[in-house]
Image (cartoon, rainbow, N blue to C red; front, side, top):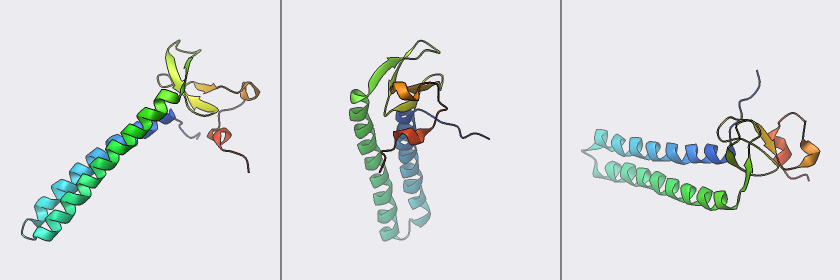
Length: 116
């Protein structure tokens, strides 16, 4: 079975959203250790660090998103952003490329890696 690819910007945004929920779960874990103030403090601090990390990731992907190339998807005719040489449409998961040498080839995210 082929690997399911997703748009890079959406992948990173999903990771940042999951960090928020992980932070909340860790903070709620402090409820089980109410008697031990040190453990409560550790759980609350770890949860807060996850949420701060999420904020940093959202800020980073926001800056990266402003520099991404905007193209019109040939499949759904909507504007989408492309990071790297190959990416997927944010809406319909159509493979997109900015490199004419890669047109018509099977989609592979390894095309984004720099050659050694």
